[in-house]
Length: 124
Image (tube, rainbow, N blue to C red; front, side):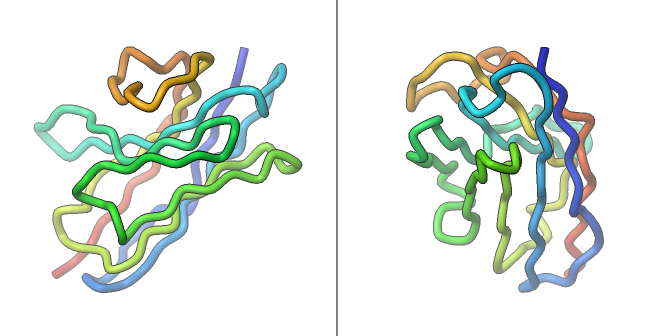
């Protein structure tokens, strides 16, 4: 079992920055591939970014060049640095853990464990 707890969400003006954190606990958490998803009201949960156990990263086109995913295995924590935020980035952001490798694993069902989410609101 893996437990994930997100933090760092909040209200920010367009053009601003936020850093989200995801603290993982449980068995062998450093062996998991980690992802960030987001869900806006009335919309499907969508892939944002993924970091493999090796450190290789993948991004949705909508955030490429603005967001950076990273991990600190010593602290069992994954981060999402979000810069140049736009109003369309407003959503609940979720951290997720995946036991299996693969660059194309961007579907909700690919991930085994989820956090409770943290709200990000970008005002224009």
